[in-house]
Length: 347
Image 1 (cartoon, rainbow, N blue to C red):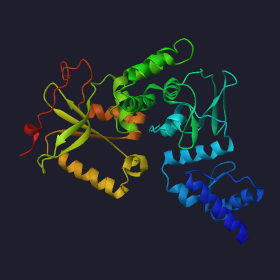
Image 2: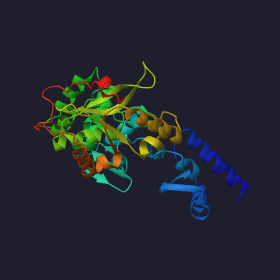
Image 3: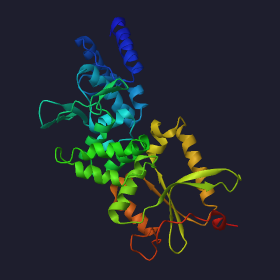
Image 4: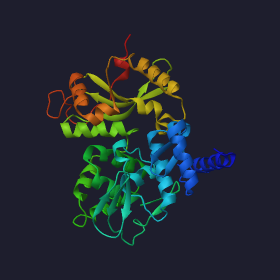
């Protein structure tokens, strides 16, 4: 390969990576050079036809970052496209479940039908001439605005995965929550799936710190379990005055306390969830917190994102650890009381 082509490829990938995007070479000779590197040396990766990235750069990204890089590349190729639904939610900052990130979701305003390819689903829908529906730009991407994005995401996604978007939406716009609900109610009868979207919204709390927590709580709603208190502050037994936080807490009618924690590889590897920490540091922080929790006389139920999404394993664990179902003698009567952490401390 000539030095000129090598230089042009370096410039191509540097420019694209500067935009957090994959490269979309327009010249045939650069496309051929990328394909050759993808096939012969493996130093280039092609996530879709005509779209390329340096393999080392691509593999250093989390799954959501890879999806956004792919979207940015497609946006450059199709500047008039508008991403919608789960794709727009991802661009706006939502921890969209992986299964709903690809294929990508793109608005198609020429009719009411939808068309699907391996890479893109084109949704046929019309937007109103309303500020809440006019496309906006985020992260270099043309997307439907917040209200319309939530509406379409919840219409298309099921209850469990839609809860991820609903919790995120409530966390983002607590002050405008009633306006959002009213906006979605205004589409009852004119769009499919709006009643389902409202049902999902009704169970949102906005307290989940990960998609796995939202999905797990949706499973609990589906299966009739008593819902836990979320994001509970626990006194640090080693450092008076300090606290640490756990995802879920149940206090049963017999006084037994169950702590629920959503773990998994995503918390270790997804840059959006690590807060800039290395996987090793995240793991060390988890282990430290585990040690502190065991200083209390509580049951600790740990589950992964995959177990929550798969439902069966999470249900088995909920039953194994004694999480009560609604109507059970172990279900608290009325609001769940806070744990007496001082009394629970092992001595």
